[in-house]
Image 1: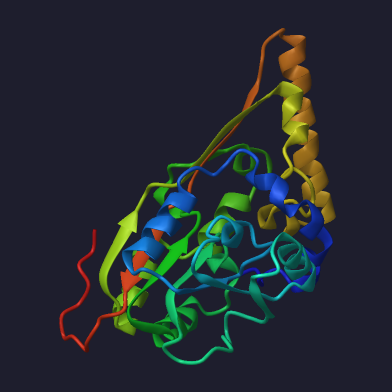
Image 2: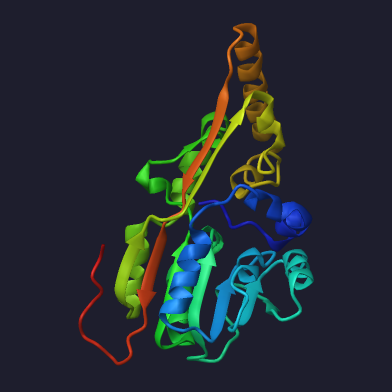
Length: 269
């Protein structure tokens, strides 16, 4: 399995990282706001907070905490708001007191955690009784995404199948850690099409633009870019338009820490 990207890789792209959110994805903030409202969250923690994009959309009455291994990402987050409580660290070692948060979440970060099971167990301990954990991110195991990166950079889909835990695996880990009321929601989605040369304006389409591409060798990345150029040339020769789709679902797996110790397990949706 490929190793998670180092913090150095994200330090290099921190300044441009938020450009990926200019077209969505739609539905993520609604899920986060619903979870926070459900437990009337007073203290919220994002693990793998990056530049603080999602924390910024939750600003209000709650205290917002963020943890990330990249100093470059955290510098961007600090520039967004002086009210964020930010900490440099890894998901493997969450440096917070037990039962200190009402809502813990990660967005598109679980694939970088060496031990998702350890993260979920730690989150359970850090949540107050009745608190909620939400894990939002790609699930290539569903086979429902249509993404040109998978089409033009061979091996990226197979690598993602190894990197990303399936929704079922995450639900099972939540069960084992003691969460109840677990559910799998499919409400968030990135839906974007790039027509012809527009694809070169996609912020993701650069060597460090997405982890799928960062994990490629320079030669593999160059070969993928050459495939895109060849496809454009063939389309131009035939006087036809070519579309590069980015239709990516970002399902959420959610679990509640019980108010009291229960013997019943979570129901799965």
